Image 1 (cartoon, one colour):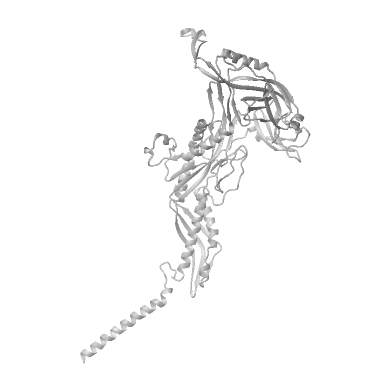
Image 2 (tube, rainbow, N blue to C red):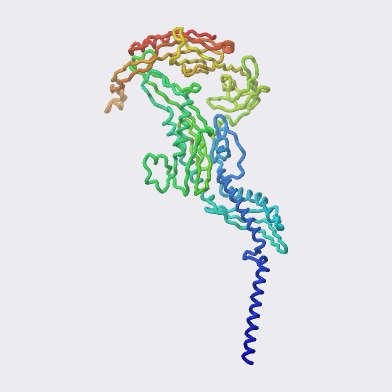
Length: 621
């Protein structure tokens, strides 16, 4: 009996254990959906909060992408237009997207910096996320019976570090499902991104440019390589360049050379000498590239020039040329060049980009900035405008003309304003004795009116209309289609036509000296010459102390040359052109006389002497 009772006790224990285990299993399956997770959110409500955090992360990444593609801005600063003189607006249009410049020169010639700080980016990203998070989509959870209430006043703190953005958001989020409910009001999230590191590298590139002007120095090198800047060529005929061709060549070269610029990397020592020219002495923790496009805004100006032509005239082709014994053409052109460069700093697939203006003035880089953008100072006299003057602008028939008005006082120029078709300009001028009011309008010759602004007054300025005239050049009564230079010279206004490439010119009424120089091919050889030249120099020894001089001589060697283009016709004529002739004529006919085709230096010299006294026939038809 003892053994039988012992067995029954063991069976009872097994039954109790089995019942407990079965209860645990049933309880787990019954209650598992309501068990709380380690973060205090039940598994029923956890998917909703996970979706909220995903939504928050997505909003942060969208804001980061905007910061990286828009030079550190989410809300772009107000647009500021450029001008004819300065082509930059405050934004670069890159593939249809505006990007604020970090450095540019405004339309009214003020140099400006527009670099956001890290705090600026953190603040703008926080504001962006505060607005975006309220649009988080929970519709799929609403359909399942969830009740989700989101507060309407998010307050986010953003901290941008090298490889992540740390987000701390205060926002009431209440999630209810069945009998379960939770209220969460603080949300922390770390978003992986290289924004901070990219910005630091971009700032290094920008600061190095402002300190060294390496982009401007590359621009000057490109200018001197691909455009005529200064030099001398042995020739008796003028040198002629098309300004448009020069500019086009520069644009192509600038785009290619800008794309070749790199920053120093780990493989710098392996780079060959040619490629090292394009490597900037700057080592940053990212890949950097520089972009330029011919389709972006450019500013290009060159002086001296005649409309779209650069002309360098020979020295030694005037009467008395035999004194020199040879001809040469010196040239010196002064350029103003302005264009944008977009810098892109990259780590992996993330790209931070910002544009900068490259400015070359007078063949030289602009002045470097020490720290903050400087103001290109206008003349001091322009800061003290205190005399009201009324300015009216008319054409010769007294019809109103819309013109830009400026004032010149002892080589200082002040922008004043514009007249219109309906009313004059009434504006303050700086006080000046015997200054000039300048008027400029499209389709009219610039007007310059002597006027003292010590007292208020009124000025009427008559502007001469420009008319486009077709030129028909004849040589000895026959149509001529060879090479020639045609100059129209009057007081304050001159035009040069390179014939036959150019056959039209803009002229206004006035007295002109018309000059035609016809050039034809020749092969005059000039042998190498050696001339001795002597000067009076201070005497050596004690005599020099008392102002005594002695003659010292030295030799000048002139290399041999061939005159391939020589003066073979033309002349000069003074002619007063009437406005009525310009309005009614179909074309301007100029008939010049030929000169013997020179086959020697003596004949070439005779041609220049005869040219001075040879007239022209000028007829409007």
